[in-house]
Image 1: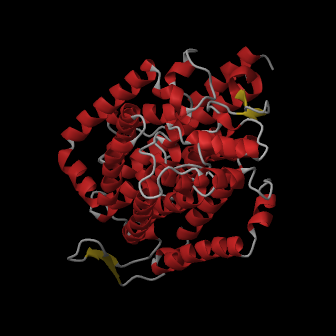
Image 2 (image 1 turned 90 degrees about the vertical axis):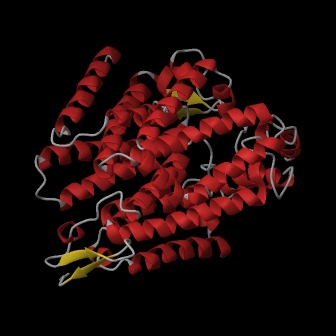
Image 3 (image 1 turned 30 degrees about the vertical axis):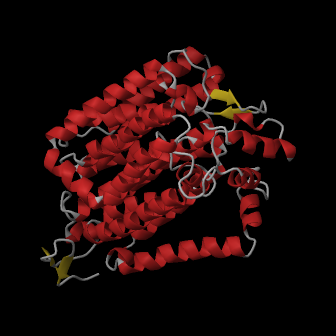
Length: 477
């Protein structure tokens, strides 16, 4: 097909998806466009790259050095702070409820003091604040459920069809080459892993919308919404297979299973069973590792037994860690002289060109390199407190709580083979979104679900004095 004709068909298809999914009865604030634009940049490429002022596929260091990108992100952050100031009460309530996240960001700021380049580390910390600010703009929306729906749909409708168009008809834009000269399908993103994580987080949200629509048979214009979301999910799954990102595929299967499981009536009616489900997942993964099952798992995912060289990288970076307690400083390991030790170790082991590496391919090790054991402890606290918040939210709003629980569990597993606890990374942003959204449900900023939505017939619901649990009376499963 002619590329021009394919472009026309793509744009018509995108317009058709937006038309099918329209809903005039639901209104979100104009401020929601701020996180949409922000996530569009994080999920694709830097503005300077789209303008042809930067080469695609390069690391975040060049993004830091682009005045155009700094100006765009700075403007978006300023606008977000203005919005959050106007939503002061809701913002402060969420910040107080998520003190582990604030403690982590505060420690990151303190760690700038011992960074090899404090000025660069501080600029990166300011950018990292943008992640949290955009999450707060989303969660402080008056209607969180519909804000999430609009966000997932807008991003998916633009990202997915455009990625197919670029990969198939504009390979100069849709495909990139790694340092070894191997071609990768990247779509609108800067590489296959970036494409994979973008597809992962949006496809999970799309699946959540589709299941919600199937359950809510009384929703107006349900059929055309189902058609739009179903088409989007098909796009997402097809692109995941094209991206060949084993981690994202495995995490999508895991997250989808959690969303399906938490949507079952037997689990929705007894939230304590969610603990057993999550415990089984962690025990299964842990036993596989302890029994040497990581080799079989790697082969099943299309990886070598050394996880595509990741185990070599992990050994080398751990051996070159500058300070096991406090690390090299916020986002500073890869710009410090210590990284030369890491590269020398890999060269001695026969690696052809380790100079291109700018991440440890493990989120926990990445945090350890930059922030030491203190940082790893704070990340663990964020995950544990986020899990508890998601469980509490699930008891009050099973639909939103189940989705947020899936994002948190997926983030914990994703960071085993990818560095996802980093600024401007979609996995980190969606982890923050999941935790803060769960807090919004628990603190009462999001309405609880009625017995009908919970899948229970009859009965009434009342809030306990503690304000964080509901008692369903006279229900029948």
